[in-house]
Length: 396
Image 1 (cartoon, rainbow, N blue to C red):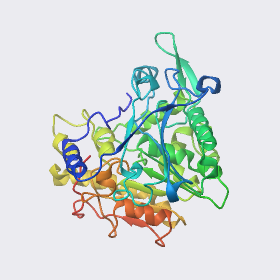
Image 2 (cartoon, helix red, strand yellow; image 1 turned 90 degrees about the horizontal axis):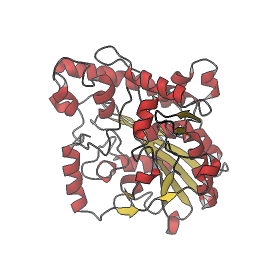
Image 3 (cartoon, rainbow, N blue to C red; image 1 turned 120 degrees about the vertical axis):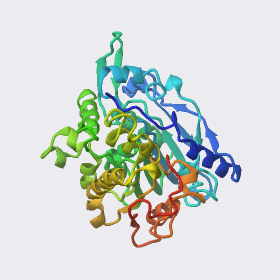
């Protein structure tokens, strides 16, 4: 079974209410129109249904005229013909259904909210391939039409077009994305960095992109199953690290905990050690436990009993073990909070507001800025166990 995207379709009520409060005191986010890739069919760079991929571009200004932020959209994966067929009838598989997007959080042009990146050129690349911009194959759909698994070509073609639009002359560049887009950020980080001369500060910022290969409460390895199906179906291999492939199979090399070992570009990982999406969908999904025994806990970590918290703290330990290699990586950073969240850079409320998580006296926005601009010698913050951090006011 594919893991379906939870974001956008089922935002938790508390997050929506707090976002409304935050927005009432700030300027409304800009709405940025969709741009379709030129010559997509000729380049073989198309969405699942064969439509051209799209992106949203907001031009930088002033001191940010030659600085670029590229943000990769997330939205889970499709690992079977059936799930990819269903996906192609949504905006996650067809640009025919995509609309304009609001730019907030790290994408905001409000200096108060986003003091370090507000005037940069900002791009959101839409996600319509179902394999974190990494597949390169095609298959026959159930109705006889073609399913196009061209995520890698989409990445390459959109980046090429952006290079022609000014990215090639960037003085500063940052690749980011959340969830499946966070994993895509890791997959393409070295390639992104290699596109620029050495004097350009090109770095990577994956948000909520560290997905663990764990057993759920019933003993099933759901994340492994989905990744394995995705890698095989969509022919994910070209983007995987060669040093990993020499020792391990493709699915293992698709895991973020393996990818971080091969990335040489400066990278900062933003993630919750209690990633709400993984806890709900891969650790304690409905059906992996009797009745409704875990439902209150997975809806709100504050409702978890002591036995359930032991399980969640075991998840946290595995997560920290998976990123411990970063501690010794020069020019890398960590912002690992203990809030029950998934994707924190794309929302102004979690990026920089009175509700933003704080570690080491830094909001996420300040931590990312201090790391990128090297205002701090190191930014490697790891939170203590829940519920130790009083700034964890959000659930998402």
